[in-house]
Image (cartoon, rainbow, N blue to C red):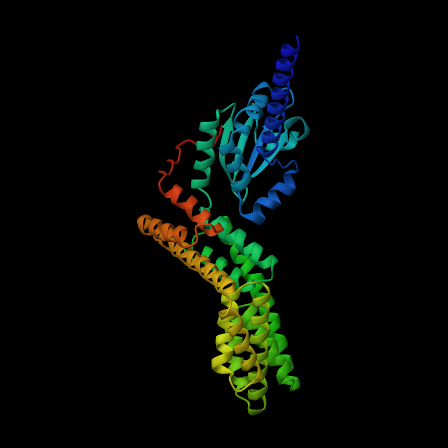
Length: 385
């Protein structure tokens, strides 16, 4: 009896553990459904991602099949969470939307571009593989992957106050001159940034008229750094040259520049970005050798060079920078249709810094290059009646 009881207890424990692990796995492998239509549409526009709508009802048998099967599939979940804005609509609570979209069966899945245009209309239950193929096809006729990614990166850069990076990314999105929704949105955001930069330039001119040349110089320097790539920054560069050539401003400007470089070098040092700190210190050593900041920069560089740990960290950072450059070059070749050259660059990025995020991203792009893109279906949208 004792041996039987121990066996039964062990089996029960294993079943509990398996059930618990399964529940935990299920928690991670879930579609991040939105439930508010207006909020989902806004998010789709802001993030440059298409909207995926599932129309269902509580008593729909095949809706439950979708939930228990395809919507638990790892590939489907990843696609929906990373590339779409998934929205679940209870048809009984949204009759006007159901009528407007002419929903006649449940489940019905709709894929809409960021401008609201329907590019996919799927009625009834679909197994995971066909559903995945339809999702990828809808992406193929919408915003290219790199455009969506660059738009998201630009949005993050704006949130961090890095307008120069945002301008570069947004200009790149609109280079081919087409009229995709994400390109229209990128042009709007660029115009907003340009307006901010123009406001700074107007303030500079006001300071000049008042004779506050030192303040004007400081504001121009900030404008050129923070809003690099805008027309206002280019105009500001010409003004800065003229202002800096004034005898009364020349020496003061040089001293402030040395102070700024030293402050940046020390901040980079604190952040353990030793390669950046060394670059800044070398400028101080060579260009401002006659100032106290030049001497302090030399001392800081010597401290980094004498430490094997700090130099190792600097080398790792340089490897990541090299990997980033190779990945960027790969993107450039991809835009020109040179898939083989792009793959070569992504491979170099992986080798340069194998443990970095950019290497992981490059590895994913290599995998995509090795996969043949799906053909666009002829009758993908629901036919008009």
